[in-house]
Image (cartoon, rainbow, N blue to C red; front, side):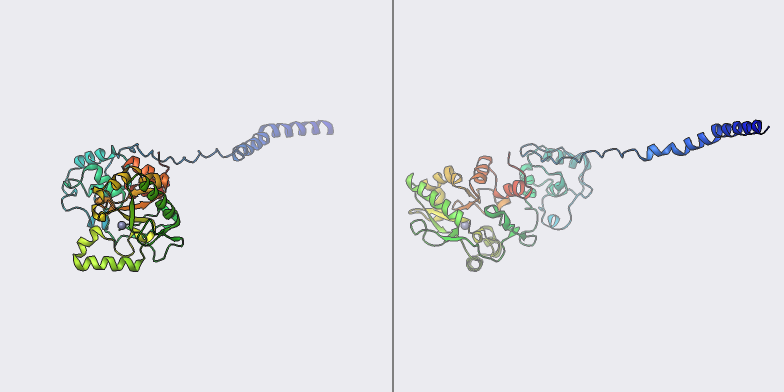
Length: 334
Ligand SMILES: [Zn+2]
């Protein structure tokens, strides 16, 4: 009897285990494997790919939310440009046209629109001047020059030279200049270039190399007193904004010629063909004042190193463009 009862109890217990406990345990444990599943791997981070220099980026599909950029760019926009009252379709067509041009930057689209309809600039000029911040207000919107860029430091009306003297100023030998100093690499390159020009029968002479802040102040003040402030700003740099303060540029002339007549000499033609081989570029080209900020100065050459000079020369760029595209954005020239 005891045995039968025990047996029946065991059967009931086994049935209970089979019918209730096993499903319960199974049910409770079922989520566990999911909880221990490895989290799916995150997609790989997008690799930054810079836009090739000569390839325009994708055209914008929509107009920028802000038609006219705020602040200085708007204040400095040309009076014959702007997009007030212009249809979306027309503005989109304008931006699509610009987007087909080299170096179009869609992050600057609102600033390009400030120049819509301007008779003064071509489409390519609009892209070039906005890309180099020339739509901002000169001097007022200036930032400190990035002197860490070394011989590629940009100093112009938007990049102010700090009030310090370059450490490696080197006197130019008397045979090459009437006076003055340059930074060591520019000095070596200038001597080599002047030797080569002499050998080619086109001797050049440096009439103005490094200038201190005080020297530039004196020169600029003299021009302002003789002309107007606005006129002086077209051909002379304000103290703090002069490339001569970098110790990396020279004003040159040919024997027997005033420096203002340098582009009528054989020495100028030689410089046009060979200066870049020594790391120098013509800094303020003819008709480029909307980017460089200064009138044509055939006498003013800037040392940037052989590699940069060769690229700027062969691609017909201003130094501003080279700086913004390849130094500031850290791209590699194609
Ligand atoms: Zn100069």
